[in-house]
Structures are given as structure tokens and as C-alpha cells.
Amino acid sequence: MKVLLAGSNGQLGRCFQDRLPFGWQILATDSTELDITDLAQVTATVSAFKPNAIVNSAAYTAVDKAESEVAVAERINAVGPANLASVATQHGIRLVHVSTDYVFDGNTNTPYTEESVTNPLSVYGITKLVGERAVSAAAPDAIIVRTAWVFSEYGNNFVKTMLRLGKERDALSIVDDQRGCPTYAGDLAQAIIALLQQNAAGGIYHYAGDKEVSWFEFAQAIFSVAVQKAVLSKAPTLTPITTAQYPTPAHRPAYSTLAGEKVMGLGIALSDWQGALKKTI
Image 1 (cartoon, helix red, strand yellow):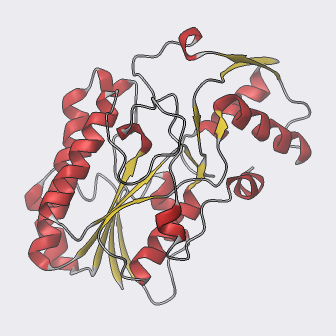
Image 2 (cartoon, rainbow, N blue to C red):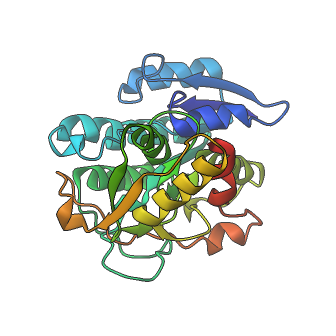
């Protein structure tokens, strides 16, 4: 398998490279090496490398910043994936595109399936949904993987932010009325590899953690492990707050648990985020 990876420096991109199966070849590109918003550049890169598969882990993920950088978010989250899908179809290449739980509005209390109605609340969510639809239209056999609350040893994420703040402060207020499933980027990478190895049918797949929590409960788990592993001498005092008490430019779904029956039906286990959290810390 020859894989062209877009977004090589992100959490998923780094974890994907770490787990590359023996015998696979990879061309790992970041935005300076492959600008997915430039169709000519995508065409030239694909023509030169001749991959069997393209994995798009590139995305504009600054959720709040996207509210004021709409055009940039659109280019990276919608135009870029459309370019990859178009070129993949022209060359008969399999495409795996990564999307998000933010395509949903969170106005439910039951896990979202792949068929659930989308209704994004933010520019980030809207641009990711436009990207999904562009991929489906240009490459009907593409695999779209929606995920959520991604963390790892790489990049910027909630786990690393909590560990940093835990060293700086004695008390923290954490939102407790948004619920979802943390996902270890390494598990997500392994799931994408499995989908490619199985030559899974095209369409949308949900992949996230195996246990639902709030951000407050996630923070509790992080600090429990950090103290246990002696990364912190003591945990800060945590106070649960509401979303209304912590206003942000972008609206976030209050509930974004993703149902994982479809991938589990292929023998792919959901992310054991609690086990992964211990290893990550």
C-alpha cells in the first residue's frame, strides 16, 4: 500500500506515521509540502507519487478562530477535501477523509449514528460538513470518518492543556454540561489503517472513545492519572461550570457522543481512551 498523507504534523498525522504497517510506503506531507487547496499541486503530487490511498487528516481546527476566519476555514475544510476527492476519483485512488462531531447540533441525549441529521452550530462545523458533502459528491466510494475530542502525545489538545494548567494553578473551572467521547489519535489512526486493509465500503463511519464523559469528568480522569503517574504532585481543585458561564465565540454541541456500531461490526474496537490516557501522560 502506498499512502499519501495530508496533515502529517497534526495529532492524527503523527500517530498514523507511528503505526504504519510493515511494507507500506508513505508520502507524509504538511501544508508547506502539499497545499490541498491548490488543485494543481494536488494533481502534480498524486501523479508523481501514484498512491493507492490518500488519507486526509489536514483540517482547520481552531474552532473559535474560525468564526472570524471563515474564508480560511472554508478553503482548508471544504475546498481542500474537494480537490483531494476529485483527483482521487480521476486516478482510481481510495480516499479516507476525517471529519468531526461538530457537524451535529447536540440537541439530543442519544448517540449519533452515521444516518443522524446534521445541523452544525459553528463555522468550523459548517465548513467540515461542506467538506464531507464535497467528498461524497466527487468520490462516492470515499471513506469519511467522523471523530471527536481527539487527544495524544502530539500537538495541542485538552489533555496537554489540563496538564499545563495543573502545574500553573491550584483551582480550575471546567465545563460540565457538554458531553462526548474522548478519542486517542493513535486508536483513530489504527482504525483508519484497518478500514484500508479491509477495503471497507465507502460512506460515513463514526469512530470515537468507548465511554461518554463531560469535559469536567474528562479533566478529573486526567488529573487522577497525572497524580498517580507522579506527573503532578497534586491535582488542582476542580469546579464544574455551565457552558453559559464560559462563553466562547463558537457554539459547541452540548451532546456529541458518536455511536460506533458500524465500525465495531467490522471488528474494529472503539478507542480505549482511559487506557490510552495513562500511556499518553
